[in-house]
Amino acid sequence: MDILNGRIQHIVFGEGTVISHENGRLSVQFSERYGIKQFLYPDAFEKYLRLNNSDLELSVLEDLHESQARIEAERQRKQQEQEEIYRIKLLERAKSAAGKKKPAPKSKTSKQKSESENKEE
Image 1 (cartoon, rainbow, N blue to C red):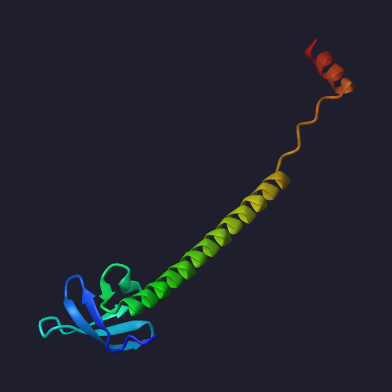
Image 2: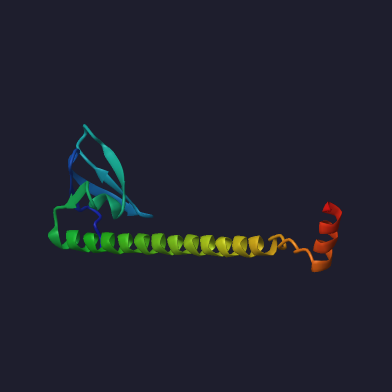
């Protein structure tokens, strides 16, 4: 899909022409008042830009949808990774705490009890 020289409508700058499309960036020439502006491709088409050619617009919106799906998948992957790290840390803390428990105090044997009773008399 080639949108070079495509006519674009911006919500503030009005109508412009795409003069370059490289490395995920669009350069658009607007009127002399606004000059050349750069936008992220395809992100800017979500809210700010519209192509005057409906066939090209559809193609750009498909690119936008794919880009958003990739971003969402990456966000979910990172969240799952963080949750797994948190779970592992909790398990490690639980194991560490279990290993550090103090032994229960020993109860006095019957011999010790009788000796202490004798001392009290």
